[in-house]
Image: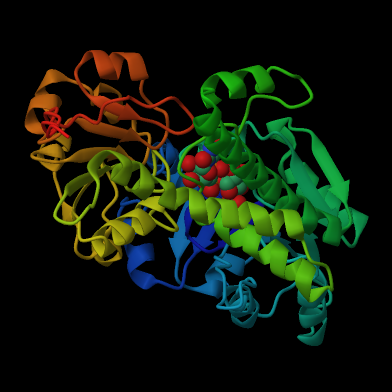
Length: 442
Ligand code: UGA
């Protein structure tokens, strides 16, 4: 079994560390934020990730936390870089946290391997390799081993990986990283470092492309009277296409797709190539978030002083992550239209991100006297939204289902007006019928 130092106690670092400990390795996770380390030592997990607290607790013996880089690096055979690489103003990836890890490395003996788990632009390996050499760490190996963990299912994604991608300069370093994952029994893809870096960016860009594609199909479905759910099912059964990432909705968010799509677009353009398809994927996603406003206006007219409940605020269910959540864009657009906005989420606390939005403790509180309820994130708790209790609590029983979570027929039978994405919407708005004005005789 190996000794693994993990740099960064965010989503990727914590899940990777806990899973390596579960595989039997000795792990020390280091973070620069001392309070986070203190909380982890005390058994408090700073993120909402199903299965992670149990895994950390179960493997406490083999899993330590520290703020000290030297402690994490001590005797480590693998130094995993799991720090954030957010977007800069130019849309490129900000690698400053990666460089800080290098700055913090103590003198190292033997041949530890620096393993890049963070998502980085192609070419980063070459730069890090050169930086290691310049710091008299030329005896330290370098391997790109990107992560494919989705929030909410990250532990499962690690333990049942579709593949492990390993890009190495020295084949022996790649062999050692491969051996570290041996017990997973996952297919292993060996490549050069640049290709491993590109596999990660291309995978995320392709998934984002599928989402924007199905969202555009949904928008056309609305115009021609087709149902995108049926279309996606029919398309996804083609084994060449597959059923995944064909859920139409109000667009993708999160800490990965928006940032990585932009980073790949910038990487291409910095290299002299205009990545047209990816530019369209990003633009379609931006517009998709805003389509809800038009749907509300269609039923309610001007939104000034209308009370709108946003249900589900995190970027997707089973996480408290608010990064790039479509709810943020929606809330600020609604506030700009003069609407009164209420929000509810079972775990996320949006804080300043949703300034001006009244955050409610329960769905019922959020929908009380509302003119419309918008399902922004498909939390399981919202499957029961169409109920007589909710209908009676609302001023106007209109549900805008931004994730096609509900069955339109059931919703309408319960007396709600329904508007989904890429589906035929209710011909009525939920508002009480206003009598036709009497025609004056000519
Ligand atoms: C994504 C990838 O799925 C992971 O493989 C990758 O490792 C990770 O990014 C990363 O680069 O770290 P994540 O952002 O956690 O994971 O979440 P996803 O489940 O991929 O969802 C991303 C967004 O797409 C969400 O807003 C979700 O609502 C949206 N989505 C997803 C759709 O709108 N439609 C779909 O069919 C699927």
